[in-house]
Length: 389
Image 1 (cartoon, rainbow, N blue to C red):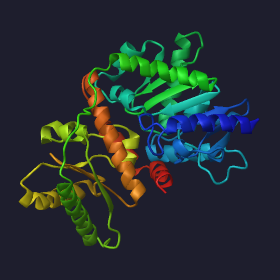
Image 2 (image 1 turned 120 degrees about the horizontal axis):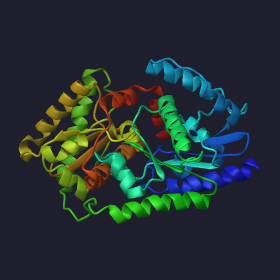
Image 3 (image 1 turned 180 degrees about the horizontal axis):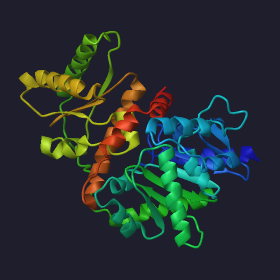
């Protein structure tokens, strides 16, 4: 029985995991359940490549008991204890895998399949100033809006309370579509076909509404200039790290550009919308904010890049994962080629999200306290390390 279930959820997960406009890297999570057990994606696993063995079996009855527990107000202590309780609900054979931190959210739905993704176009709405009102206007009264809160237990508790309120107002029925502010989409259904239909209802409604789309007109760039920028970025970061005693670990780098990047990075003013963190995944994979360098004459560009990066590293207490130079393009940095590639992919996704947000009053980034929580949360560090290994 469980083999059939796992084959079903693994196939469905790989389907959407292979679509970059739905999920990138280790983002998103999926689950399937029977009467006793829930199988959920292991933390850090990528949906695009997930196998049946990478789902963690959880005891549904023991998961339900967590809702009656009381946790401290201190965020770090609360999440540490809630995670320990969550880990204790794993099946006896699951000693090596860590379940997704959003397992409790999946468990509260009676539906057989729960699917959480981060669609780019939808996140244009979830990361916008009109988010909640736009969700109701575009997607109708059948969706439940979840305001942005820290991930982990507090997010699950918030969803639990809002779902209970929904049920009280809807004759005990559960919502099947959640729209999570600065985060993404959750749908719950009984079959893969129902999941497809729920996704299509959201996509079709957005397609009928969105008129402002990312720029896809051809743009010319100078490859030699991009290489000069890459060298300047790499040397500046290496010098900063050397000053801190980390001279043996130069960053992996790759240059990239796009029409939307060139348009957005044309001036400091037009780039301002990119300086706020949009979702947890953007923070985890491409950093909480990029380093922006305005265009200057070629003779002084390397010095300008160096000054900007040194200032960024000192102010943010971390080296940037993305350096953008106005009028030219960007450089992604990472400890490994995979981390560098994911930083690039998430930043390009952020550019599209910000553009789509213009359909809904403009972008609205995450609150700073939530950004700092994610930057320092052990769970997110674990997820990033596993998914980029």
